[in-house]
Length: 227
Ligand code: DC
Image 1 (cartoon, rainbow, N blue to C red):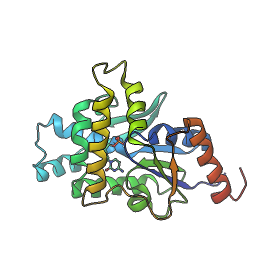
Image 2 (cartoon, rainbow, N blue to C red):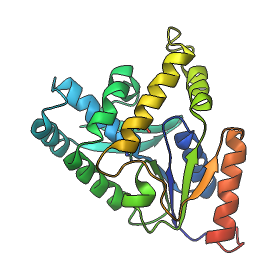
Image 3 (spheres, rainbow, N blue to C red):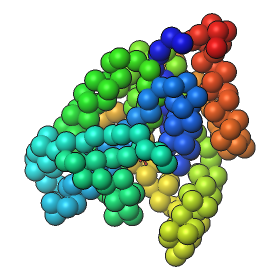
C-alpha cells in the first residue's frame, strides 16, 4: 500500500493516542505520540529541579537530552537517555507542568524538527496539537479529533479509577478545561484546527467507530478507493 502521513490533532482526552495507534496498526504505519515528547522534556526538567521561568536552562536540558520512541506491546515506549520513562511521564506532576514546557518556543522548535525528521520517510500517524498546522502541513490526511469537556473527563476518570481513586470527575473536568485553555491560548503554535483538517467529534462515538471512519477517509480521499 502507498505510504502517506496522517496528522491527528485535538484537545487533551479526545482519544487521539488510542485512535492514532489503532489506525497505525491497521495500516502498518508507525505511530508517533508527540505529547509524550513534551512530557519527556518536562520529566527531565523536573528531575533537574528547574523552575518554569528558567527558560534558558530548560532549553539547554531539551537540547542535551536524547528522546527515543519505540513500539511496545501496550503502546509506545518512551526512553530518555536510554532510561525507560514510559510510566513516569504520565505522573500528575508531569501532567501539571507539561503545558508550560510546551509553550516555550525553543523547546517546540527542537521537538518539531525531530518530529519532521521522523515523518520524512512517510507511513507515520502522528498525534499532537500542531501536527496538521506546523509539523506536517503537507500530511495527506489531517484529522481534528474533539469531544465535549465532560465526555473527555469521563473517559479519563474511567482510565484512572484504579491508579488514582482519589481523583473526582469534577477535578478532572477542571484540569482538562485548564489544559485546553493553555494549549489554545499560547503564543506559539496554539491548538487550532488546520483549515484542511477534517473535524471528528467523538462525543457519541466508540473508539472503533472513530478508527473505522478515519480508515474510510484514508481509503476514499488518499488511496482513491483502493485498500
Ligand atoms: O497529548 P498529551 O496530553 O500527552 O500532551 C501533553 C502536553 O503537550 C499538552 O499540554 C499539549 C502539549 N503538546 C503540544 O503542545 N504539542 C504537541 N504536538 C503535543 C502535545
